[in-house]
Every structure is written in structure tokens, then in C-alpha cells.
Image 1 (spheres, rainbow, N blue to C red):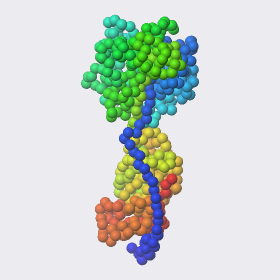
Image 2: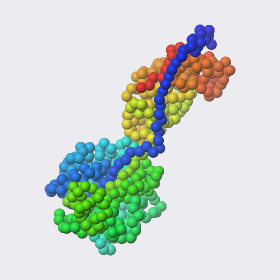
Image 3: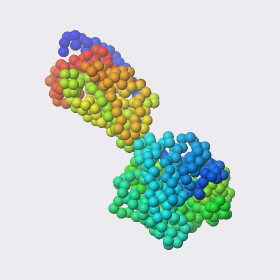
Image 4: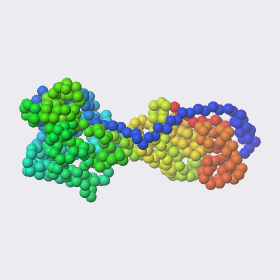
Length: 505
């Protein structure tokens, strides 16, 4: 080291610096978002008769589903009418999935467009009416969620049971082809009378694929009995009107059951145990109208709405959506490693990237380590705990200055490949905290002890290691040539003289 350099070192040692930082690391494997899914037989809903809309609005306003799968809706005009006059009366965020008109009454799907994105609707014919596969993207997590909306053949008797079983065969032909671990559910009006019915047995049948379903409820035998009163969904009325079924609540026709992945504690989409709920059923209305006073599950106004809207009760379940793996491809150049002559980095080194909340106090949300390629200057950082949103990127390494991305953060899409380049503009770092070397904006080198400032303490480490001819992969090798010598000390010395410090929000 030169005499001037040693004088500068002594000068820096005499400076007293006080640095305080708060960094609460909030990564949690239990991070999740919830969504409520509802299935509802609308009892031959036709846009030509909107008298029941007032009741449907009352029900939807109380339940507030994030996804609503409906049965017995008649044509595209009815789908649009129900969306505009019922769902959009609750929130303009509700949209309807692409509708496919089938040979009988149809299935349709409505969803909160702030939470979900519709991908596609596939209708496949069965022995009686179409079944529909609605594929949805949960925006925040990036998870894909399949909903199979079904309406099986009604009525008792062996022939009708066999038709229902054949319809389930058509469903299983689809789900048995899905990769193991796929997140899917089926819901709708299954018109089944008990656990011994062939259609139900086929739904539960475990085979070599992963296409079977798991029922959240353990209901053996015939379901039409008072023991199962809390889970009955038809009929909401005892007397006959509006072409609906009568007799009061005594059948579990409307169900929502889940794939093994959704039923497990490891899937990206997980059913919340105990959340399945025949909406408005308090278990005290067996063979009775849902609006007989008192109803202990909902208000009397909601009970009346359920009674007059349809002969079926809606069923809801709540699901947790865990983040899908998210890649952020980060391009960066480290000042000491960047070789202007070769145009490459001297070494392929590991960097730790954090995604931080864009809102004060800017807590760490997730972290990832990756090796930054010496030729492409890029590392692919994979995060598993991140929902779609705005984040700061902060970078740390063995001898680099902690550097944050530009003010305000950047939008990261969960489950996708995102990119960020620190090298093409000084403004890409918070506070313009990059140094131009050749044609690349680089992250400052020399913070060997990672305390957020290049100062005399770092210089002492580099100086001592240079004096001892330390070689190999070590923190004081600031230029990446695998030996600590005067060239490393010079980089640290220059940045220490300029009191280069980390700049954060």
C-alpha cells in the first residue's frame, strides 16, 4: 500500500459512523391467500323472467363468493343477465367465463376478476348433458385451478343411477389423464341419494392415476335421513311453486369434492378443513322449508331469499392458494469482477437476492441464491413465497455493497419468469447507487464485512490478507482473480475514500 493510502486508511479509522437498520425477515411457509368457491343450481334461470333476481342478489351479497359455478342456466343471454343484474349489483369486479351452450340446461361460471383470470372452458358431452372444465388462474399466487361443473341426471331408479354413473365415467376419463398433483375440484348438482350409489363410488375410486376425488364429509349409507340434516341442499321449500321440487330439506344433491392434492396439506391449492357449508342450512330444517322461523344460520331475509330463489341451497368451500415458484432473472455486474478488456466477469459468483415489500418498513418477503454467469451477467433467482405484486429487489454478496432496485419497486408476476437489469442504467438502483465501468453500470465492490459501507474496517481486512498472500475463494478477493493483493486493496481503498454506502428507502 502507498504512503498516501495508509494515511487515508488512518483518517478513515478516526471517523465514527453510526448506522442503524431494521430488517424484519417475514418469509413464512404458511403465507397464503383464501378464496371462496360456491356452487348453486339456479332452477332453470331464464333471462326472460328476472323476478327472482332480487332474491339472488340477497344471497350473493351475503355469501360473496370469489368463484360461482351455476347449473340450470338457459343460454348466453341468461348468463349475461345474471352477471349484470345479480353479480355486478354486488360488485363490478365479477365477470363471467366463456359460455358454451349445450343440449340441455347448462353450467356457467362467474368470478372475481381482481383475484382470478379465466383461462378456458371445455365442454365434454356425457350420457345426458354436458360437463364443463373451467380452468382458472389465481392471480396473486400464479396457481392454476380446474373446476369441473356437473349436473347429473335426476330421479331415482336403476336406469337413472346408471346414467349418473356413466356421466361420472366421462368426468373420470378427464381427471385420470391429469398429472399427479394437479389442483382440481368438481362441484354441482349430482342428484345422488347416498354413498352406495355407483356414481359416488366411481368418483371416489382410487386407481393407478390421481384422478379420483376426496369427499370432505364422511357420510355413509343413504343421505336422506335426519342425521345428515346439516348437509342437505334440496328442497328449500315444502310447497310447490316456480316448478321447483318440494318436501323440504332432505337430500344432499349439491356437493363440492376435491382432488387428492387439494385435500392434502402439501398442494399449492388446499381445501380448508371444515369450510364446506350448505349456505343457510342450520341443521334444524329437515323435511322443512329453509325459511321456517327461526333459521340460526342466516338472517330471516336471507332465509327467505334462499327459499324463493331456487329449490337448491348453494354450497361453499374455502381454499388456500400458496405461491407457485417465481423466477426473477437478474442481470448485474460487480465492479471488481467486471473485466473491461474481456467484457466478462472474472468469476461466476453467488449472489443472494431478496424480494422486499414496496411498503414501509420494506420487510423481506422471500430470498433466493443464484450464481451469476460470468458471460451473460445473469442469474436466475427462484422464489417460492411470493404473490403477484410490487417488490423491491435487494442484492447481497460476499464483498459487494447491498444494492436495492429503483424507487417504488417493480411488479413481479407469481408463477412466471420476470427479469430485471441493473447494468443498463444508473437509475435501476435506488438512489442511483451504481458505478459506471466501461459500458456497464456496476454494483460497488469492497464491503467485505457487509455492514453497508466501504470503510477502514474493510480496508484493514483486504490489507491484512494481501500482506499474508491469501489465495483462493475468500471475501477479500474483491476482483475475483482468486488471490488477495494490491489490486483488491486499491478497489477497497478508492471506495472507502469516497465513503461509498448502501442507499435504501
